[in-house]
Length: 104
Image (cartoon, rainbow, N blue to C red):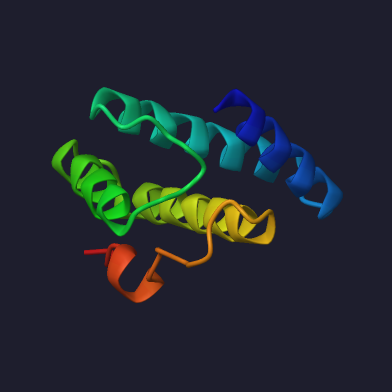
């Protein structure tokens, strides 16, 4: 798991992302993978649609701000794209229309 996060971080830096963006994305993905761990999921380099909806519901239930949830969803989408580019998985499991939270 740590190796994939390090690869993701390197990939973001190589893409020219700012230090703050890299730190934010890596932090969001680390928290997401820890959440999956608490759910008994051993992350193997592939994401499932259920993981995304479950995590989003967890964030909503714990009163995270919509902007924070949407930032985390964006981070997971970037991670999903990275996993596809590296050949860990074939499909995009994020649907921003469904996964982003409307600001009330």
